[in-house]
Image (tube, rainbow, N blue to C red; front, side):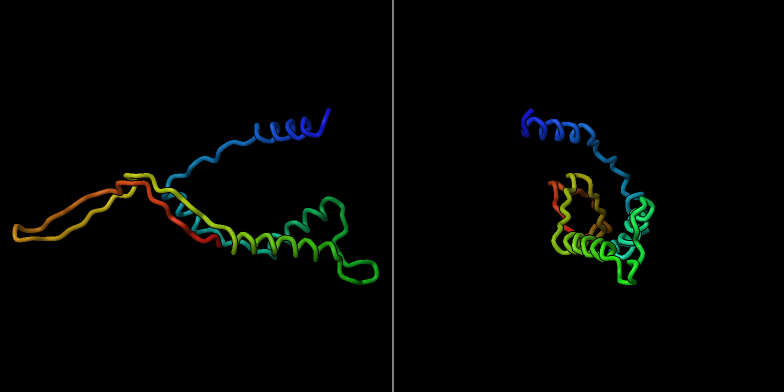
Length: 130
């Protein structure tokens, strides 16, 4: 068996396990997003170190009292990944046509006027990951 066959089998296995996420209704998505605290390199590092410790890998100071370089390395990796997400990542979303509804009111010589409308084309929105 050559390397390309092995890579193909691994790729096929990984691809077969991918399922698309369910899309949440907008009001639920809005409420859930308000409760999120944002990314924290310190909190994520602490959770990773807890998992490493639970796996039996020493995470405390070294026997000579020096700091555990593994913990410092974990923090450096997490911090750089989070900085890449914060400063290099881009969020792009598509807003389907006719998904935005507007209502406008105004007036003219004949009295008050109410208008309703919707977006005619798909729109693109960009944001910042925090």
